[in-house]
Length: 168
Image (cartoon, rainbow, N blue to C red; front, top):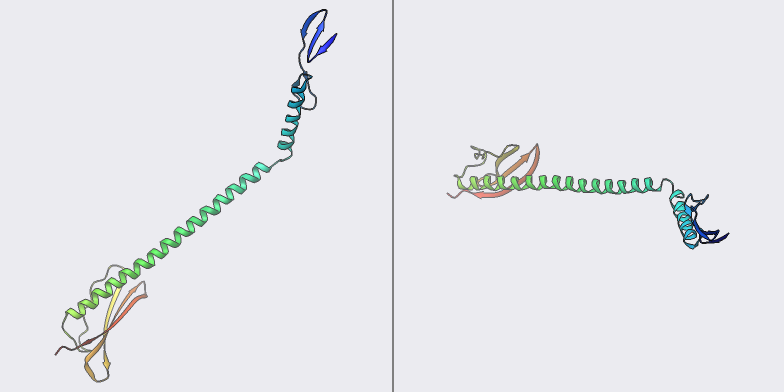
C-alpha cells in the first residue's frame, strides 16, 4: 500500500481514509504541510488563551475603574462649577440690590445722621439690606457717610459706602 498525502492506493483503487485526529490538539489532521501549520497555529492560540487566565477580567476591571474615575472627575467639576455659579449669582444680585438702594437714598431728601433712617427697598427672598447714615466729621451734620449692607444667609455679601452732603 502506497500513502500519499492522506490518500491510500490499495488494489489499484484510490481509497480516501478518514483523517487522523491529533492527540495534542484534538484537531483532525491530514499528514501534510497544511496539517502541521494548522496544529502549530492552534498550539500558539491555546498557549495565548490558556497562558493568560484571568487577564480579560483584570483588563475589564481596569477599564471600568478608568471610566469611573473619569466620571467622578467630571461630576466634581460640574459640582464646583455649580457652586461657583451660585456664589457669583449671589454677589451679582447683592451688587444690584446695593446699587438700587444707594440710588433710592440719593433720590430722596437729605436726612441728618441719627434722625429718621433712610427707607430700605424690599430685597428678593433670602437677602436683607440695611442703610446706616453716620456723621463723617464730628459735629458736622451736613456731611454724612452712608453705608449700605447686603446680606444673604447671615453673611455680608456687599458693603457699599459713600459720602452725601446736605444740598441746603
